[in-house]
Image (cartoon, rainbow, N blue to C red):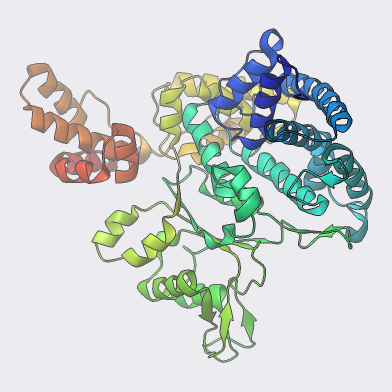
Length: 520
């Protein structure tokens, strides 16, 4: 006999799929609708920060109450039966995991966001003791646990899950589908697409996979790297009642663009005293990390020289390296996240980037959407993003006024068709300019040529006269998209084609005209 009555089983299944699914795709909203039915409060079509709903999501509150009641009833029936069928076990385990996680969501959130008010060794004591009691109540049925994870393992998983929500949901803005797909991609970089397989076999192996973040400047690659690095799994020591490391200290960002090759090598690999001018002492490098939960973020990765590329290839292949001027072999135990705004395929073809290094990087690639892509999908997204930026700059009483002032300026002086070539970074600076000076003037070189003249005007005239062949029209359109996107990857994604097709058929003379007009 099942512990779930006929109307309860589909609800338990939908609630359980919330805890094992990716929260950032439209399927999340569909599951909430299935669970709540008439009680569902309509809102955005993807799960994202909504400036119109600054408080807690009412749907999550309602699902939490419903799931608590259903889990309590199912547990009582399971205790009375003394056993669970395989089907009931899956439904009950996921349902109880959902309930237990949301019981501890707020306390774990405070551990992430508030300064420590007690010594670290006592920080989790009371919270973990309470968690163990709830764990045993839910999962120790018939004198044995039905979960594969022990209490400290599940506690560590919950803390990781809560950090992933915080740094993905709260820090990567946007209600458009491209923004939602970006958050979903970040989630997969942390947990893979199958969180149950992650729990059972990959949780201690994700450091072996390198993540590569690509996309135009200003799109937030560093926020994506931070979300991944601050959401890594860190074991919980049940005896000491503390995590094995501080998650913030385990994230190590390094911007490579401002460093000379020698300094990059010193920062990455460390050096021995006297190995170069200025090396007054032995120095430990970023890669000398003994723990698998450490993350080294290498920004502007695509522009490092060939010698350092070769050394990094060895690190990724063997996990071994040597300090500058030292023969001792050391091991890198952590994870590498790399970011670049250059087209690595182009760099490989030009002989500036090693193909073998790229293939060590490309097992997990996140392609950043431009702000233009997001606004093309959801034009109203600009209002939401400006409001969210305003809330970060001023308090709630002044945010609405600043957002309204910024949108009026953008509409009156730039227009809704402005392409935002600097992406989110430019939008943020634009709002700051309006906060300080009540105006924003983008650099003239970043403003696209008008359609009335230049290469775009000539293209419009050729279209009007019908003087282009189909192949010429296609080639010039490919060039136009490449000019707008700035990379073959972005162009191919926008056109729904293979990047090689875009590259081979693009009208390069027309692209050169567009670039020349842009520089004038």
